[in-house]
Image (cartoon, rainbow, N blue to C red; front, side, top):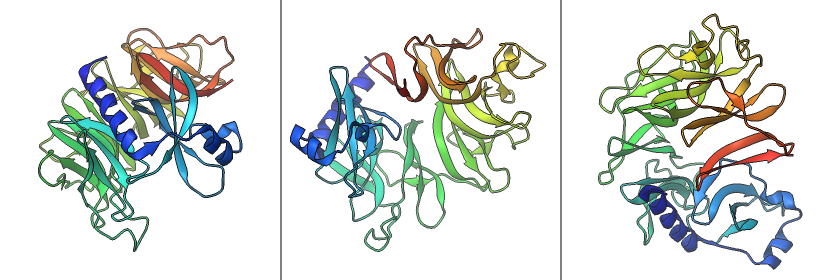
Length: 342
């Protein structure tokens, strides 16, 4: 385990101890009606005790808890007992832990934890929370790039835009002369920041930012649309997107210079999708890298786990347990975790 991951886990262990307490068996029994209460309903996140995910409670009070699982115990629920609750988008930057949280005064904003205490970084959207409980800038997709922390946020005036924070000065909105809005899925590949955004004309497309010039759109939607699950793999950008030729989504590859292309063109320049493979892999999701292998889920009649080594055709991961519909692929402790049904 490298130092960055170890430091991240250590920090998160500390912040959990400050803001969360593990319930007793009696509390769990009293508050939960069935074992389904701890089923994942969102993206998994690494934490000091294992993997964390959101789970809605079944007692009708509308509250949301968080479940934790590690290798030595079954999942259990963490009950919030302090401020800020419902931490999300946990990201290490400059030796500190950054995350989003709601403190019931400012709404959802950017926070940080320095190993001792948590504090709000900035009140980007300053509409008081008690006037509109949906307010706050809702920072998302926290990503370190070029010695700054980038994220999407809504300041209440300019809509959802790309922001940056250098660790010292107040966060600032990235200059944008191209009408881009609602950046999502921030991903760093080979010295560039990639993300998806909508310019109001071409729909959600793939964009690129070099840290200096205004972000630019990589394509205008003439080949694909709605890119998602952006992932760096072997120095290139991989993502899922809908092709204008085929109804469902496919895996695409972008090397930073040539136009993005469907992965299967690597073997079949004629591209009548996946006929070279003898299967039809539709709707790839949750692209995730482990040990220099790209894993993803796809549907060839049933949704299964697939892998790609960067050279040979993708293959389905052996499955003798009747597992199907894997979701939320997450790497933890040199293993791949996910939600699935059997």
